[in-house]
Image 1 (cartoon, helix red, strand yellow):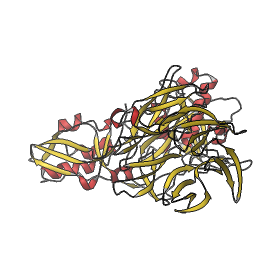
Image 2 (cartoon, rainbow, N blue to C red):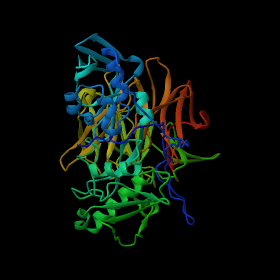
Image 3 (tube, helix red, strand yellow):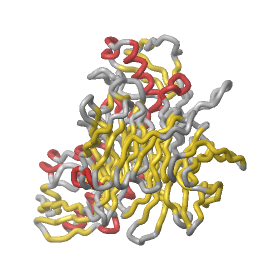
Image 4 (cartoon, helix red, strand yellow):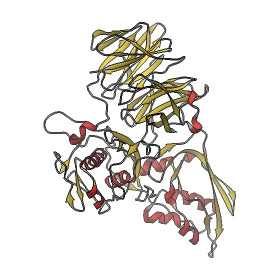
Length: 565
């Protein structure tokens, strides 16, 4: 596989804005919102070659610094290697990210050991994964003097080490889009691409052609036929139009497949601020689609959006056994349950509500048109329920595992491939994303909580959560989580300092924004526009707060919180 770090690295911390264009008429359509650094300055990282008389330690440190410059196939870095090692070293097998302040070079010739705190990895396909707390990097570098008496590295492992600062300066993170296996709804993936002369559009399309992340590959599909490439190797952008010319493999694709791959391209390239439309061709000939013009925009594929419905802004709160909707200062009683509730979650269409009783022992479902609560499951410590796009409900019963309530009302266990993160019985919370394929999971061993992301794998006979991987290193305790966007998860929790905070974690690059919380924060939710809400219990008061300009403003009394239109 080809590592997505073959372009020249540039010193830039740049994150891009989502909506590429605004229609001149009709309603406004939205793409994924990506924060933007308006700076347009590009400063190339230029490595320093070795100088005469450098010590073995200086050679090793110089080599690590030079790995931030991949120009000429890491030409400067290879100057720190003896001739045979320079020819054999393959830097394109992946990146390990370390904390620069923790790096230590120990030992003497002929072998030096580099050790540092490991922050994460970037795979050869550009996928970021967080490291485990306390993880360390350890690499051995053998050195020897060449014929001129200069020290050079003679033996080293493939791949490269980069400090977190080098990664921040040299990479940009983006969402990219695949499909579920039925090609009916989009699935959000993520990729880190180097800031390079080849351009982000080219890197993103090549990432699409490489396929989804390994954890998503069993449940996500790419519509591109096997072997599809960029005909000319790049994606030029002219007057806001990204021109994607694909190889002849596309010619054998049917209309459904062509429409799906077009949607993938448009949704992926839409995150670039300099792209307003996409023109797709095959070996120079326009790709013809029924009812779709030659210049495709996000409006053409808005029906495939996995973004929250922006109309979901009416707050609904729980007060004992009653659920009220609160719009401005007007409150309306919507449902009355047989007993007090602690959680309430609507399905995708809002036609049904799943609720959990205050003792967390009963899960009930009611139709939105009536208050007839039907008992569908019981347990000892039921979590907040979550729905997938097909109307199935998932929940954890801590100590007993994860359960699924299928559309026909059947209850079946869900196995969790937790790997080294924990066990099936240690799942504290489960939360399906808006695309219905990815899932966030909280695992707890009673001492430490872990937030991980995986995928839901379903057959007629079983449901499994696969590919779980940690998304954050510092959180130790979790109260509640929510998908704050298709590419981020917000967590009420605490770290080693025991401070209770909101951690908003990006799945694109692992970066975390921290916010304070109201006193007694219990549950977190998000409306259709991306605003965060927290319900808190302070003594006998149960209050709901909305985040506003970095602070929390009280908007209603009650607990829980979900949104309707």
